[in-house]
Length: 286
Image (cartoon, rainbow, N blue to C red; front, side):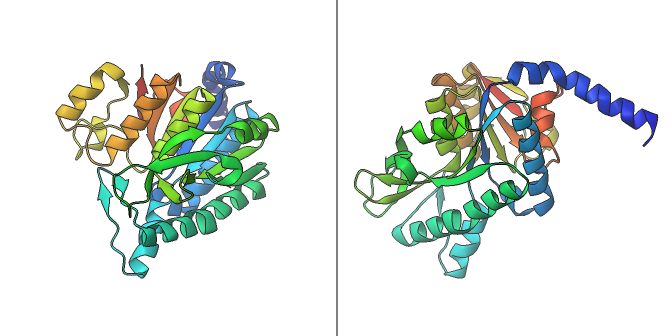
């Protein structure tokens, strides 16, 4: 290894040290989703990044989606995926497939990958230990898209105190005993709010909030809450970005210190965003 390469690596660690000192003992809730989940190389890099952050004394909670895999499975059953402003419309047939994919495939696969890399972790759904209580998001008997009413974070605090990473699929019970599909961004926001986390990080397959959706270099790196309404009226924030930004707003208003929307398709994107001044995503602050 050349002296220049060694020097560059030490310079990076030296530059990251102030961030790590500040983050030690913090709690980060990370939503892991988007098409990035199907890329095995990026998945392994994500696990590496989480390992590094945990070794630096950061408590990690992961909430995962699985939209790509759900859509793939729905189409196999000749069910057309339907969305409203980025939120999945979930009828009873769709709900059955959502739960099967998230808790039967995506969650155990992710937990297994973490444990194979010596990251002590456990898989949960919102049904486990009454973690998430939900109710209908839309006024329709047959729509099982839910919203979070309550987070019972006792199990999360217990796991975090034992240095165990909770990996949570966004499926929940309602008080009506029905199963609900919760948008993973919304779920992560509610959990971050409940834990009074230091950061909510939405790792997805978009660069962040873009001034021009056709220009990935037009990313807005810092957004204040006061900017949101104008960005919405200008259609800068639209479609699938709406639930992401609204999740960030809810978290900030509940005491989460900062929120990030970053591109999981970039190698080591978590570390670039969190440990350098040259952030790569959109940070939304109050």
